[in-house]
Image (cartoon, rainbow, N blue to C red; front, side, top):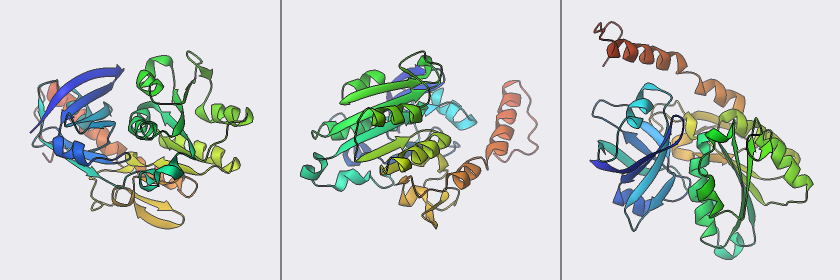
Length: 293
């Protein structure tokens, strides 16, 4: 069992949990993910690691309560335990394997959108700890949906905030802020973007015109996290790749985002059906027609 050491709200419907998982914490690297199962009959949930502390033996995850399984996970409290916490899985970020002297000659720009800001943090922290210059853009609809701003200020060379409504920082999309930074003379060797699929698509389009290498994380496509279900198939550079075993990070300029977004919506009707069943259960309805568990 994996005990929840800490739980706190980051924004409406977004929860941070620090989990006691020493073996995962000792092996984890930036860019990797874990598979979480809240209960014995619970669904497997792939979540990108938001932080890890080998000395403490803890791994941090950030979850947005948007479906039946994520709501059940987010309903747990500190002191409760998860049934499964498997990992680390997936390939680490590419920069982890670069020589330190080469890393320190590079300048990175990270763009985090919404809950995708959480997995940006361990990457920026890892680079900061090794003396690498990193700028960060965090984007959200409003200031109330911004997360990890204080943590990011502590590790980023420069932190830029963009909100759709202008309630904090730059008013507009992260792509518009990216264009403005470049127009002001900022120069980067690589951009890493993690967030909603549509955001990553338009970040990749924006960086292409600036000839800026771009890496994106397609963690939102994953279902079982092993490559067996095939739900995470994505076309990258004209070839079929499996996000959970060959990623989750890929060259953003080669990803077929339109296909990825169609695949991402494949299970929406099933999720809505499950949500309706759970609502009926909560209301005391016990009919099991169409319920397989």
